[in-house]
Length: 342
Image (cartoon, rainbow, N blue to C red; front, side, top):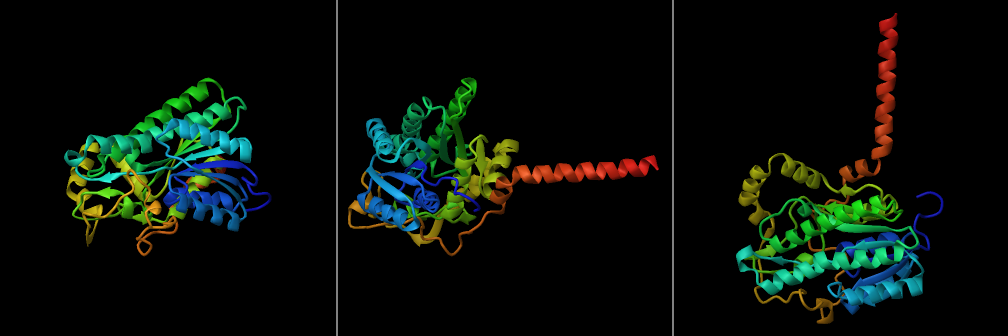
């Protein structure tokens, strides 16, 4: 990083800030000295996150919020602007899920996942737009997934919510373009990430849940979100080679991908360890309120997780690489023309 950090003293809001990808995103902005509003349910995780923000050079405002409640989200947005100044970046990263075959889900479970993973993004986006549009500036980053385009077995409620976020994102982006607004919305599609959520989400699987390999560190996701916030004109970013492969395969041969996931999707989302059917989960109540403390950003998969994504680097440098390729092509054409004329 050279010169003044991009987000020094900027007011940033992150939902799902107490753990996982949201926690890693907070750290990324804190290193640049941002003023960050931390939105999540659990007080222990929020307090630990706020301490990290201050240690890294940022300032933090903790706002206990269930993003499923639009009034709580709107009040948090008011609090963030009152304490930290006009919101420049809003990151929607709140998460919950239920691992189970579709036939074993209850209506309440599907509703809860939808309220957090889809409506929570709606509430955050509406709260951000209500404050950004009058100023005609700001960026909203939706933390998405390859599952926003491609459903996978055992995560039907979560996949449906991510599909809904994708549809909402596309529509809102088109509306802002129609209005010639300078407020930007972008989406970051993630691969499997090593977060603690796989240890606390509700699961009816016989073995412990895991991200679909290849697994990436949450810092990879956080760097992508930070880059997207700084360059929000692009409609979306794909992180990880597996995300690219999945989305391309789904466009070319979705039926074959159905069959592939039918064969591999169950085993790839479970470890060899047996699941405890009586393990508590955080679907309705945050576990850090029930003596479990702070979960941090990382899950139980540090060893196999990748700390870097070559594909993300290519995405970040796409403009420069395209310019270099164009210059190389132009030079080659000039050489060929010169030889032809001789």
